[in-house]
Image (cartoon, rainbow, N blue to C red; front, side, top):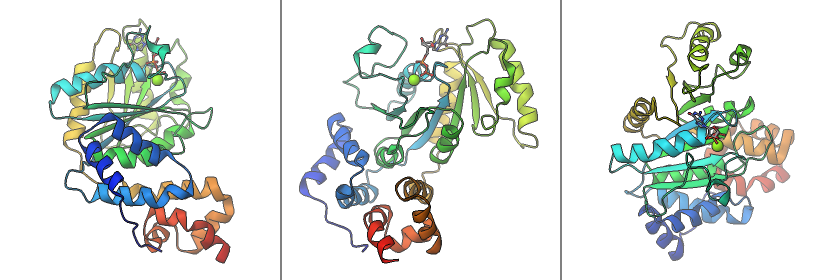
Length: 322
Ligand SMILES: Nc1nc2c(ncn2[C@@H]2O[C@H](COP(=O)(O)OP(=O)(O)O)[C@@H](O)[C@H]2O)c(=O)[nH]1
Ligand SMILES: [Mg+2]
């Protein structure tokens, strides 16, 4: 069941071009990783194991940027990514925007100068927009898969998600570091304390600090953090930025670059059991979950099946046999 299918010559060539950050090759591989059909699993498994065993492979730092629509996530990404590339001439960044309101590649943005217009000539910056399945935001069904791919190719993968409750929890399990982007509140301090928001991020960014209420929001947030997260050894960082004026972006970029440089270099294998469980739950519901449970849980199941792809490919047959 676990025998690895051979890599085709075409895919080998595609991988070579993808390691050279050729945008069309990266896009072609992304399509393979976004494909939810069972028939692509063996090809995907072969590609992934070739990527992972290649000496050119990267171990990207995964940075999550979450927060309510309109807080300025896309604007921050658009301003900070070129700054990061300037700071480090060797750095490469992939951005995955799981944001229904991001129309980066479409024409809708052409009038909006502050947001992302990736330079097609710069191989070091790659942008991909993904649809979110749910209204509430969160990760798309294939976000994890795409991150598995991109983390082998780029030094840094930035994931922009609309965070509303569950979505924030999801990103915490995918990204190495999660930044919650907030905008100054028009006096509605209660928002800060909304259950499920304060606990998730590793750091907060109050964006739009060019707006008058920003300073008050900063103090309110810092104050409520002490209440919401008592006993934390280190204070949760709160950055103040303006994607409009550029204030605070130097500091933020220094922090981000430091995260990339000090990243431990783990691959995403440690996150597979969780996202496999998510897949089982979505595709098979309680029956599937019970079945995996009876086999000792997701981690054991993946190991016995010979990896994520073979576990998925063989799941229907395994459940039927049980
Ligand atoms: N005043 C001000 N407006 C901003 C700032 N950052 C973003 N915006 C604006 O806020 C709106 C939403 O920004 P966007 O980046 O799309 O937010 P996202 O939904 O979180 O990705 C856009 O009109 C931006 O031009 C900022 O720092 N200050
Ligand atoms: Mg956006």
